[in-house]
Image (cartoon, rainbow, N blue to C red):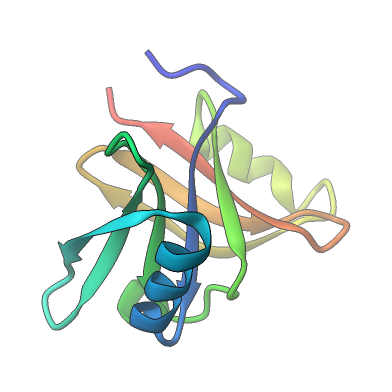
Amino acid sequence: MTQTGKIEWIDLTVDDAENIREFYQTVAGWSADSFDMGDYNDYNMNNENGETVAGICHARGGNAGIPPMWIPYISVHSLDDSLKNIERLGGALVNGPRKMPQGQYAIIRDPAGAHCALWQKAD
């Protein structure tokens, strides 16, 4: 079971994921596994123990328009309930919600202008 409020993942979405992947492989010591996106690959970035700790993605397809910054994915109990409160509290929906087999997420901007993603794991 996923713990509500836990940061589950971080992603970086950029125009040139290959060069940024190489940058983090060199400066952070991460290794990379390709993740097939159809026409191109995104990357799972792994620590020295082989654990995936981050993702580096191309700003294409469903990721177009995502700002080029590290985005943490925060677990929520109900994505729908969380999204209902964003605008009322001065935030904004930036991208999503998007579903995938593991769950669903949305990237938001808080009232201060900071970005994060809200993540609900599939049942």
